[in-house]
Length: 381
Ligand code: AMP
Ligand code: ZN
Ligand code: ZN
Image 1 (cartoon, rainbow, N blue to C red):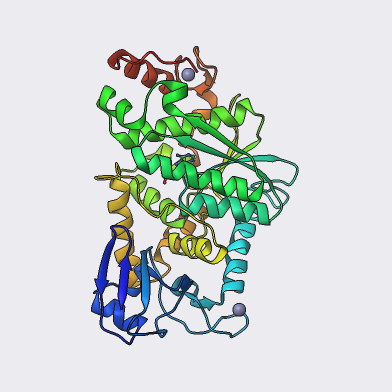
Image 2: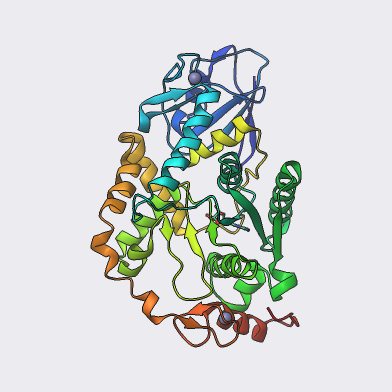
């Protein structure tokens, strides 16, 4: 059979007929790190593949085995050892949506009558074209929230072109609004050129630019909430990084709901913090959401990846460890809250009026450095 391995892409020929589990063993792939698709459908370890089957193997993180749906007992399409459960496609979609429901209604740090997002609020979701943010947009729409999208063009070659196309198609198909900000067009630099001009890492330039543009667009267009697609794996890895360096102020602010502090700052929420990467990838496949499977080509050397890999080793041995780490931290968040003194120090940036703890915000300072080094005449924000 022909096996198409994704990211990095490669084709392998494996003798058949064979069960999915045998194919994975043959290729030396731990089953919990991937999703297996046969004729566009998700299949489990026992599924038998014929001699001339065409199979796709997508990398994701964490997982296990379980044959029937915990709700209806029909054949399962996905297992999740962390929950000791498996689901059919219908009930898996319910499972994902109900985890988001729970995150919104019972977010850590909020009172019983408070919500991460209310139905009378206008929500802006930052979409990258990847699985997490597009799935979240789909879920929030399905739950009936008023959500528009924001895509930031980072100028990372074909990767950015494809990401933008996927976001535009998602919005068009559903008749929902997508804002677009092209860094080069609006601010006169791309992630690679900005990194080169400042000597900073591409991830550093990218992260600062995204955070700024997300808040700026939300403020300029009167949205009350900004949602991002950060999932359980992202948050657990960030937490581990913050713990390894004991970054108290980051720990104090690593919350699924960050209230608006100061003026010109909207509330920031992460409704996917209870769901893993693997669950989000499966959700997209089951809901027919087209997303960019490839990773950002500039990500090499990103420490976030090492932290994720380290946690995956632990998760494989003890399913649920990641969730325990993150949820345990969130339960104890008050122990870290004292380190967050940002709210008291915030003022408006002299140049752009966005919140900053200094006189000129980090984004305006970065832009100045980039323009000093780049021969580009750029439009002012
Ligand atoms: P990342 O920092 O790439 O892990 O992405 C985290 C979240 O930021 C995603 O789930 C999206 O919500 C958002 N995001 C990342 N890249 C973009 C982009 N180019 N445009 C809009 N939102 C983005
Ligand atoms: Zn079911
Ligand atoms: Zn500024």
